[in-house]
View 1 (cartoon, rainbow, N blue to C red):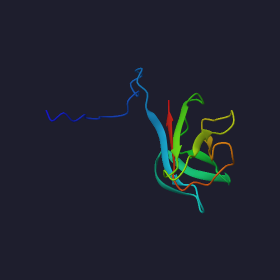
View 2: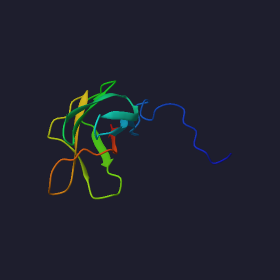
View 3: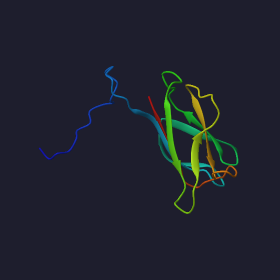
Length: 115
């Protein structure tokens, strides 16, 4: 045994109490918005400065999922946040902001959805 973990299917597909990342995306949110890499994300909608909608390729089982993310390249403080109080089974809206100032288009945006 090498100590490596073998992965043979999605965690949680067997109805267990384990939960998985159901969607993720790494995208450029500055200039022309573009996905670098993703899983279960069909596209990103640019809603304006620092404001994006993540569109899922396959819908979530319900809207009670958790949204995690990060932004920035270490040059200065930026905050990732889910936008507003509405997330649907097919989309979630996220923003990038300089704390205490305004929304900001960041070239490094990462979002992960867990359920």
